[in-house]
Length: 547
Image 1: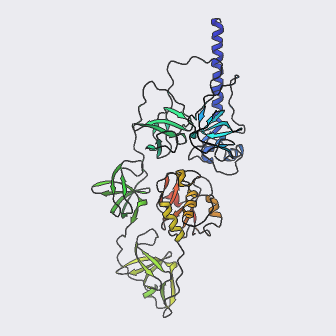
Image 2: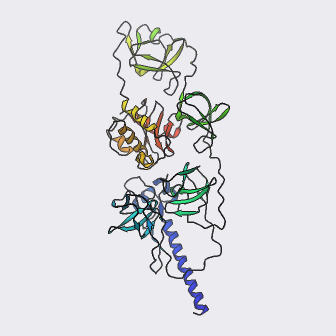
Image 3: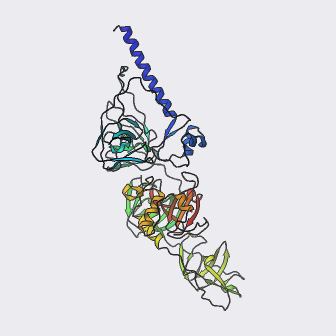
C-alpha cells in the first residue's frame, strides 16, 4: 500500500468514527433516561418540551414514570448510525442470582417472558442503559444488568481500521451525587454490604462502570454507587495513570433554623449529630427516657445539649413534655359554665385533652372526662378556655355540650372511634424507620418501601386487609373509610393524604402518630414529619381517612 493510500484510509476511518459519535450525540439529545426524582414536568422543563408533547411522543396515559425508563423528546425515535460492518458481540455475562426475569422490553413494567435460573451463561445481543438483550430457552428479551457479572457489555469495535489512540487518555468528567444518603457498596448490587454513605452534592471521579453501577472512591474507601443518583450516570471508565485521590468530604448544607425553647423526653437511645441529618458525624448518644431542652430547630431536627456536648437529634424519637401553664384568667360575665345562669357546659366524650393553647399541637396539661361540668373562661375559634386546678387551659368546643341548668349533667358521651388497626399499623411501621425509599416496593424483603407500599404492608400485618394499590385509589376508593376534610383534627392511626408532590393530584400518604406528626416512606427513607412545622407538607394536605 502506498503512503498516500494509507493516509486516505486513515482519514476515512476517522470520518466514520466521527459520524458514529455525532449520531450518538443526536440520539442522546432526543431521549432522556429517567433518574430518581425526575417528573414529567421537570423533564419537559429541562429539555424545553411541552408536557403534552412529551406524553404524546411516548404514548403516556398518566404521569407515572419508572427509574431507567427511556423517554423520547421528539416525534421520531432516537436512532444511532452504525458502521457498515456488522459488529462482533463481546464476551458473555453470567447470571449471579436465582429467578432473574427476562422481560419483553427494557423496564420492570414490561411482561416477564421467562425466569432464568442462577448461573446461566448468556450472550449479550444489545445493551440499553441498565438493561441487556439476551436469548435463553428459545426466547429473546431483556434482563437487568445488576444481576449479571459483566453487565456493561458493549458490541466490539467494527472491523474497519480505527485511528491511532492518542498518547494520553482524556480525563473523565466528575459525576455529582444528587440525593442525600447515597450508599457506597462493596460490589455492584443492592444486596452487597454498605461501606459508607455519601452526602448530597459530593463530586466523585469514576474509576469503572458496570451496567447501572459506577466504582468510585470517597473518604478513603472505594466501592460502587448506583448511576441513578449521579448527575452523569453514563460515565465510562477511564484508566488513570496514577491512583485517583478521593474528594475530601464537605459538610452538607443545613436547612433554615429557627430558635425554640422546648423540653423533650427521648423515646429511644438517640444519636446526637454535628448537623441536622443522618449524613453528619456522631457527637454522642442520649439514653432512652432522658429529658433534654431544645434551643433551635432545623426541619425535623432540634439542637440539644447533653453531658456538656451539643448537637442535633431527630424529633422522631422525642416526646414533647408539658410546658408551664399561663396565669389564671378572670371569667368574662355572660360566658358559659360558672358565669352563665342558663347553661352548663358538659364534656360529651370519654376523655378530652386540656392543652396550654388553642391548638392540637400544643402541650397537654390535663384531661377532663365524660359528664364533667366545665367552668368556661371564654370561647373563641372552636376552643373553650376553662379553669383546671389553679390555672387555665383549652379544650375543643366540639366535644363539649351546652345543657340547661338543672338538667341531667351526664349526657351519653359520643363513643371514641376504634384506633386498634391504626395503632397496630404504626407499631409495624416503626420497626422499619430509617430503611430507604424503594419505588413500587410493599415488602421489607426488598430493602424498603414506597409510600403506598408501606400502608399496604403495615395495615395487612396489623390484621386490616386492604389490596395493594396506589395513593390516588386509596383516596378515591372506599378503602379505609370515607374522606375527611383537611380541617379535620386527626388522631393516632388516621391516614393523611397529600397532593401535588411528585405528580399532580393525590400522590403521597402516611399514618398519623398524633394530631400533627405522621410516619411515612418519603424520598429520604422511612421516618417522621410534622405538618404544622413544615410548609411543604402543610400546603399539600388534601384530607384524612379513619380506618
